[in-house]
Image: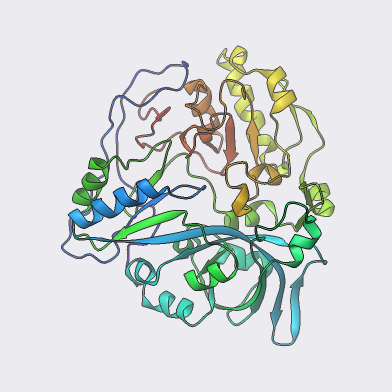
Length: 427
C-alpha cells in the first residue's frame, strides 16, 4: 500500500512571524512558506483534490482538466453524501438496529477506482470492486463492527413531487445491503464512516460530483502551479488539498472520530423537514441551556466541550476583549445545539455539527456564512488554543463558527487565508 494517502496529513516545519493583534480577520498577506514539496520520480501516492460541498462547477472542472493535461496527469470525480444505517447483521444475528423511520448518519465517500489504486492501494480497490465497503476504525469501534458484517444502508431521497410527504419520499429511498470488506485507519477514509465504490454510491442516489482528484503527475510543484495558473486555488470558492499538505488548524474532525468522542445517535426528519435526534442521546450528552461565566453566552452544549468553551471565554475576558463578543447576538441567533441539516450541503443530507452540540456560533451578523469573515483574530487564536477549529477558513467561509476538535490548534503553522497562527510569539 502506498505510504502517501489521500487526505494524509504530513507534519512539516513552517515558521510565521507577524505582529499580534485583535483586529478583524484579514487575508494573509505575509505569505508564510509552504512545506517542502515531495521531489520524486514516482507518481504513486501523489494526489491533489479540489472539492466543494455543493458540487464542483462545470467551469472549475474544465479548468482542473486543463491543468492536468498540461502536466500529464489524470483527473477523476469523487462524491460524498450522508447515508443512513438502519441495521448491521453478523450472520443471522442482528448486531445493531434502529426503529422504523429512523437512521444513523453515516458519512460516506467514493472515489474512482484509479484514484483508490494510486493513493490507497490495490487491496482497498479490490474490496470496493467486489461490491463490499470499507469502514473507518472509529466508526467500526462505535458499533463494534467486524469484517464480514453486513450493513443495511438507506440512500439519498429522490427528487419527487413537492406535494409528497416526507414519509412517502422515505419509502422511495434506495436501500442496499453491503458487506464490510475492510476496517482501516480513519486517515485512509478521510475521517468518514464509509468508503464505497462509485457504482454503489450512485445506486444509493448520490450523483453529484463533490470533488475532482488529480493523480499521475511526477512533480508536486508543477501540478500545484498548473492549477494556480487556471485559477484553481484554495479559498472561498473551492477547497484544494494535497496528500503532502501540512496539518491545517481549521480542519475538523471526521464524523467517525466525532462519534467516537461524542456519541452516535439515530435521527429522523419529520413532515415539516425538521431533524429530530434520539432524545435519549440528547439527555445523556447535552447540558441544559445555561450561562457561561465571565462572558454571559447562554447555550446548550455537549458536555464534552463545555469546559473548553468556558476556558476560551475566560481567557478572552482576561485579555480585555469581552466587548468583541456580541453576547445578545449569540444568545438570540448563535449557540451550540440545533439539530438540523447543514445549510450548505442540505441536498446531500449532511447533518450540521450543531446537531452534536459540538460547535458554538456567535457574532453572526458580521460573519455571515459564505462571506469573508470579520471575526477578531485574537479571539480565533484563543479558541484554537482551547481545541476548536474556526469556520472562517472553511469553503465556503463560516466566520461565526467554532467547532470542537479536542486538541490544541493555535500552535500549528499553516498559511491560513484568514487569521494565520502566530508561531514563536506571545499571541
